[in-house]
Amino acid sequence: MAPPEYAPDTAYGEKGLDVNKVDIKKEGVAVRDLGETDPALDKRITRQLDLHILPWIFSLWLLAFIDRSNIGNAKLDGLVKDLHLTGDKYNIALTVFYILYVLIDIPANWMLKIVGGGHWLAAIAIAWGIVGTGMGAVKSYGGLIACRLLLGACEGGMFGGIILYLSMFYKRHQLMFRLGIFYCAAPLSGAFGGLLATGLSKIRYHGYNGWPWIFFVEGAITIIVASVAFFFLPHTPSQCRFLSPEEQYHAAHRLRLDLHGATSSEHVEEEHFTWSAVKMSLVNVNTIAMSLNFFLILIPIYSFSLFLPTIISGLGYKAVHAQLLTVPPNFLAFLFVIGVSFLSDKIKMRGPLILAGSSLAAVGYIMQIASHKPGIKYAGTFFVAAGMFPCSPLILAWLSNNLAPHYIKATGLGFQVAIGNMGAFVATFTYLSKDAPDYTKGHAINLGAIGLVLIFTAATMVYIRWENAARAGGKREYRLSDVREGPLGYRHPEFRYTM
Image: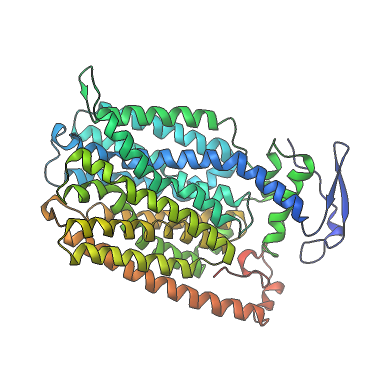
């Protein structure tokens, strides 16, 4: 359905919003521009978006994390032995996933708008589901490497793509809770994947024993769910078939009001790619600082996701028992992601909560290093899970809030995800078999990364406070006289960075 025709340009002031009520019509239906969107209408639109978008996004990200990390479950069930993964071959198989994963992040975000967000996210999920299913049939180390490379290529556009996609529907300080809803699928995948792997590892059929069925079944589930999502996920607010014409208009218009002069386009469809937008995105202090911070945050998150079964097994627990013991800390992380995300949107802050979460995770790694008692070490995994997992959606929402309009945000988020996921190259070699069973070196690497997260976060908060004060004091008004193509975006004097 085409978006409603909005009011003539003459109805808008210099700053791009109309304080008067203007009637517009589409297909005989009157649509009122209320300037500031009516709260009841805004709430109704948000509720409809939540019901029709979030369940699919949650499901796709749950399956994405299961399909990339189920190799850790397969390791406990005989993958290493059957494929003769001696030395560091297993760690290399983990690492190659991220080679293509990080290279396609930025172009994948550009493609999302060209193809249509709903179709793009579902299509790449179908693609990785096919590859994930095929991993169950590999018979050699070379085959495993090839599958992991392809899996990374297919999943590369999902993470940043979901964040960009949600930012096309929700206002800046509605976004964090929605990111939390989708991202909490990551720790939940550890809990769900551990339970599922425990059962699937018992299957013996047609020469495929145990671990192949983890890949067969979980990959097939991804293909089915993504195929259905392809037909239900909308592309933009003005194309939501579940909204009335008036709701479609206001769903798009409220986003423009929320950006405070950062864009002159009423609908995201009207924005066009320019290389100047790419440059503006990459020279933003927020983009650089938060991308490096994301790199540091993902080191403990990825190492936790990939090696938790191995760490617990090193405490003296058998394979099946170790699989089951991965469930409680991951479930706690799930609860913390939801709770912290809600709080973050409530207080409209990201940085302070990253500081708190990182500090909590640091306690967990200190418990791992300082104690020799399995019970205390296992308790430390709860601190790590609860502290670190919320930091990932927090840092992503933080950058998304501080970039505008669409292509600047698309490029910045793609860059952040690409740089951040390079942390996987560190994470996949933090826990080596030669360091078993204590893995002190791995815990120390993660603790060091968390220390740097604290420094980067605090420094970024100082910069944002200084820049917002400069804008409030009128020191950026000169930018309004700049002669340039397109809107000022995040550089607009009225645009305020989120702390």
